[in-house]
Length: 216
Image (cartoon, rainbow, N blue to C red):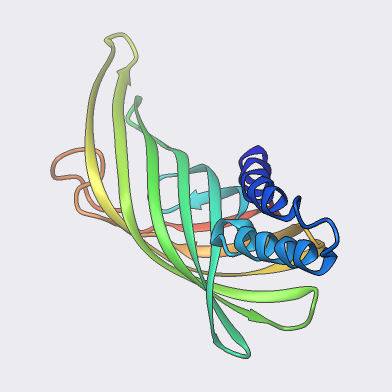
């Protein structure tokens, strides 16, 4: 917000300097103000929205998922359909524990995600809108397998992979006020390739998330 104020001040000061000698020409002075205002509102980041989401991710391994989004409106594809760009940074901690014949195997994966996506929004009414997301990004998967046998102790092995991952999702937002939306979504987010360990099976989890977006 401070950056925008500095830009506006930088534009208004020269306009006021040129208008100062012509004190008897209020029309010219007032004309300079709309010009400065229109130049500041032309910045697409004026409509930037940021938000956070909390959810649950599940497939062979399951756990909590956190995400931060930034959304910038791009253009109206039709009177009923709008396109915006979304950038997401996420974190998931997924676990699974299996016990058999007295031996316990615990699998843990910590995942960092960066996904750019296109969002198609369909306003139902001024308060409610439906949307769909399609994106492709990267995930860093750090995985650990720990095995413990009573009387023999435990041992663990760790590895990591970098995976391409997709996002195919749908959800809805409710406009609480001009600057705040709350929403929920369901997603299919497959990880492409080995998951955490070389030769490990890939994962194709579903996610359910809820959170809010705020206009800056």
